[in-house]
Length: 261
Image 1 (cartoon, rainbow, N blue to C red):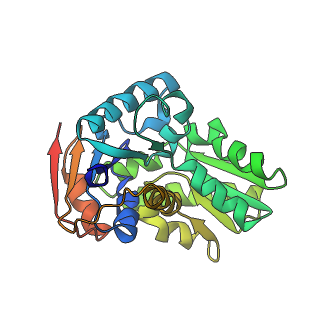
Image 2 (image 1 turned 120 degrees about the vertical axis):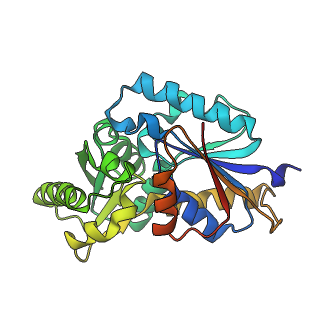
C-alpha cells in the first residue's frame, strides 16, 4: 500500500534532524528513512553542479528504500530544486518555499535570512518572497563556517557562538528585522544562541513549515500511515557519532538504526 511507504529525508549532514523532529511531532506513525552526506558537508561551499550531482545520488538511494515522497531538508540543496525536482515518480519537497510562504502570510515589512553563503547568494528566498509580495524587503547574511561547525559533532560552542554573533551583528546593522529565517537546518540546533544576540526577534524555523506542508499533502492524497509500528533509519556517508549526539540534543525518541554507507 502506498501509504505504508516511507518518507525520505535528505540533507548535507545532520541538520535535517530538525525536520525529522517536526515530522515526528505532526505525523508520529510515519516511517522515515534519512540520508546525510556528512562526508561532503558543507554543501554551501560547493559549486551548483557538484551539489546537484551529490543530491541525485542521495535521491537514488532513497528511491531504493521505496519512499512515497522525499523531503529536502537542506536550504542549499533546495535552492537548486528546479534542476532535479521533477525527475522522479515521487514528489520532492524543498524547504525554502514553505518558509517563504509563511513570511508572505505574515505580511511583514522586512525579513532577515541567515544561511550558507550559497543559499544567500542564490537569492532564492528573495525571489520566492518577492514573487508574491514585492513590498517585503529581504536581507541575507551568509556564513561560510557555521553549518560545518555544527555538523562536525565537536560542538565547539565558543566558535559557534562567535560565528553567530558576527553574522547577527552584520545583519542587524543593515536592517531592523523582527523576523529572521534560520535558512539552514543546522541553525535551529543552536537557536538559543541566535536568540541571545537577537532578543525579541521571531526566528523562523523552515523545517516546521516544511513538515506542515508535507502533512497537508499526505492528508490530501490519503497517504498518511496509520501503522503505529513505525521505524526510523539513518544512513550517513560519514561517521555516526554526530547523529547519536544530535538525537539526544533534539530529544528525538523514535527507535532508530544508524548506518554508514
